[in-house]
Amino acid sequence: MTPANDSASAAKFETQAAMLANRVKKRFKHLDKRFAKQNIEVFRLYDWDIPEIRAVVDWYNGHLVIGEYTRTQTIPEWLPEMGRAVAEALEVPPQKVHLKERKAGKHGGKRYERIAHTNRKIIVSERDLKFYVNPWDYVDTGLFSDHRNTRQIVRDMASGRDFLNLYCYTGTFSCYAAKGGASSTTSVDRSETAIAWARENFDLNGIRETGNTLIQGHAFDFLEKAKRSRQTFDLAVVDPPSYSTTRVRGVDFDILRDHPALLEAVLGVMRKQGVIFFSTNHQDFEPRMDRLDVAEIKEITPLTIPEDFARKRKTIHRCWKITV
Image (tube, rainbow, N blue to C red; front, side, top):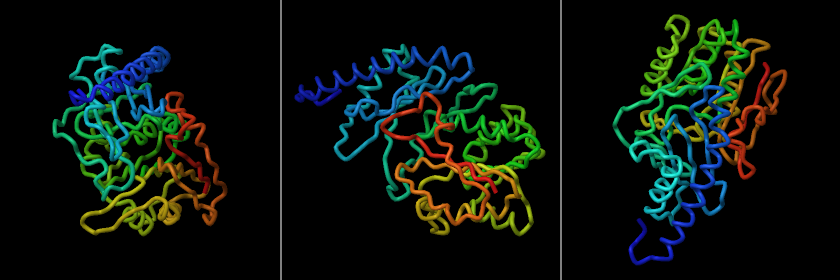
């Protein structure tokens, strides 16, 4: 609760909690039946839609993940109050409510460190695929629902292609590509945890190990080795973090600065007429792709943003289709 002697804050929090709960309840009623028909169990219910309520609310098959976009003047009691109101409105028990702080910027590479060590996962459906998510231990749960449409676009193009998934995280794009009939998938991520998680998702969806390779390593290192060994692809997804730092080597990556070099390196392992889907969620991203020697660069952001992520205030991500 709010500080006992701060009745003004208490009243303000109560009003905001009621507004948020009302908005989320209406949104859930609108989306739940529609997504149930598509067997989609993870979707967004709210994202800072009311300026003074700096929250984001996601539904995970009976669980709620509720985040606050924190700032220096954030009051610790605010988020639990919002969580309680939303949970009551949707009749979700407290043990299935997960509160998270979302921080903007680099924060010395500590933006989203592990916040718990339960190692618990639940299974959620997205169309005819299933994925493990962990709403307890990390701010990011293992499934980026804003790329639900992009995954389907990749699946529709994957038949007979050799697919590269750079910064693969938990391998969801690779699962879609494999289910779409890709000749092979290669998934690369520097995180051992992510690669193990991707393997679990492969197993969950009946995707065999043969022809579906998981590689723990750095993207630029992999691309260099692949080029040396003349390994090539004709479909790729490149969805890097906005910032990252390699502790061992002290190498940092900044998407604003480094995306031209990254895409040049990816082009070095792509076949002619191959397609790269490049995406970023950096809110101030400015593309510098004019020097890439490719057939076509087309921004396809509107096609890739699902209904539940469409917002006037901000675009959850941007996405380009690059034809080699």
